[in-house]
Each structure stands twice: as structure tokens, then as C-alpha cells.
Image 1 (tube, rainbow, N blue to C red):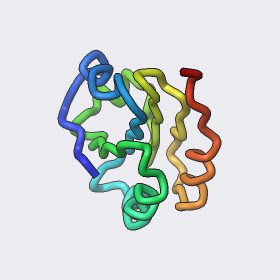
Image 2 (cartoon, rainbow, N blue to C red):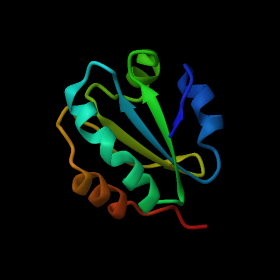
Image 3 (cartoon, rainbow, N blue to C red):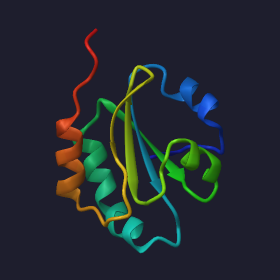
Length: 110
């Protein structure tokens, strides 16, 4: 999974402008983030149409605040620059919960 460098919400628009992108917000000190991390390679493999980007919440605290990400681990999905869904809260997430969230996403009409 590619690591998103420190950036603003304005700069993020360029990163997510084309294709499908899934932002995964976490932090090294977060036990619930550590819980889901081992499942992430399998989730990435199951959804190859998404580009998964790891976002260190502490490094990108301003971006997290701009995107209203106040709990981690959290996921925000984009398709061609538009947010299409978010799984944002402070609760521990299982692989099944993340997959259910991704399966629920509908992409904007072409």
C-alpha cells in the first residue's frame, strides 16, 4: 500500500482526480488500526480497481481534520475525484466490515 505524503485537502484532489482511490487513515499508536492492518493486503487484492493509500493520521492531522476524520481506523473512497463513501468512526473494523463497506459503494455514472 502506498503511503500518502503530508498534504492539504486541496493537494489531495490531484491524487484522487482519476480512477478509484481508497484512503486508509491510521496511526502507529492505534490498537484498532493494528488490528485491521494484517487484513489489508487481502482487502487490496480483492478490490484491484481501487488504489489503496495509507494515511498517517498524525502526519496528516490537518488533512484528517479538513476531511472530518476524527476517529481511526477510517476509510474514505473516491471515484474520479468525487467522494463516494466513507467508513469513518473510532470503532475497530473487521475485514468483513471493510469489505461490506466497499461492496456498498456505487460509482458515479460515466
